[in-house]
Image (cartoon, rainbow, N blue to C red):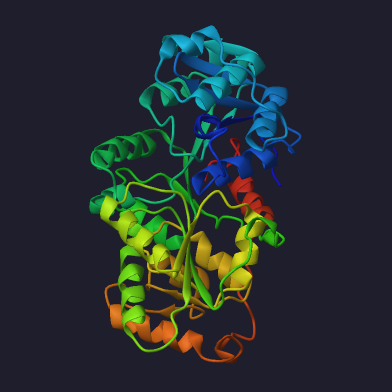
Amino acid sequence: MVSAPAWLLDLTRLVSRVGRGPLTGIDRVELAYLEHFLTLPAPIFALVRTAVGYVLLDRHGAQGISDRVQGKVPLGPADLLGLFTQRHLPQSLRAEADARRLAFARCLPFRLATMLRRKLPRGTAYVNVGHANLSPRVMQAVRAIPEAQIAVMVHDTIPLDYPQYCRPGTRDVFAQKLAVVAEHADFVLHTAQSTRMQTELHFKPIPAGIVAPLGVVIALPDARLLGATKPPYFVVLGTIEPRKNIGLLVKVWRELQSGSGPVPHLYVVGNRGWAEPALYNDLAALAADGHATLLHSLSDGAVTALLQGARALLFPSLAEGYGLPPIEAAALGVPVLGGKLPVVVEMLGDYPVYLDTSDVYAWVKAVHHQMRPRVQQSDAHQDNPVPPTWADHFDHVLSRADPQQKT
């Protein structure tokens, strides 16, 4: 592995998530980067944007953030600066206050370039994997460091490609961020070749790209928080929002209820997103009928235990940048029923059963098939796909994104 003079990891997103329940998606990626960077011999720094300016952390401060994110150290109290903002959740106020207490330097926004130039070594590599803090101010400030390099991970371009599945206003904000990446990044980190191809359609000019699949860590099963499950059952895993297409599964279960056979149980595991209230009402009605359970804030071990007992993972998502749930399920040998998304095909090949994400009856038929006795054993692949590892990811990324070796 090539060593860099120093690394500056942006932790803005992660600090904003401290104390707000289990990490999901991009949050986990930022934490994985933090944990790995803390093992590197080169100097490690972290940058956090707060409501009242920027804080710069050294290795000790970055370790302190890691400990708080993982619940090893409790959050301290909010400070006066945070209380004056009056716009953050209490947990965020406390997390930002801790970041200020851990910082070895901090500044108002207009002093950011000066702070970074004075405090960081020549050739420092700035790494942003959280889709946060992607602004001209930050990029120009990093460039104030002599011979600095910038690497940014773009997880997907869903807000541009499928704005109908995103909150109003998301497209314009994301377009601005992507323009900043195109103008300033020396390297763009992509999690799959399919997402790289889609992302680069939006770049002018196209920065150098690195494809490195995200590591997948399968937690040891821990069923203590689950309670008694209701077999036979299926699992859908992910934030409840339009692009996850959970409404399709509501229709599938209504069809199953109208039939003459037994109705399997559906476990919907994920935090509430911005889906229409009607979807929550439909899910609540399924739960009232005894055919669905909504779960959130499950530990990784509890999710593993739930997946291991499932007839299949259901993944009717309409758009994904990576799609961790089917990769995790496949690694456990659990059948996957899902739409034929390019990134899923790239990562899992012919392991999943691919279904039309608008065809209710195809899904009903597939669920019935998985309900047959021993269907899991008869349909299971001899070799479960081996998930990518973080070790491989970092070996590839850090050797390619070395500030001294521009691709």
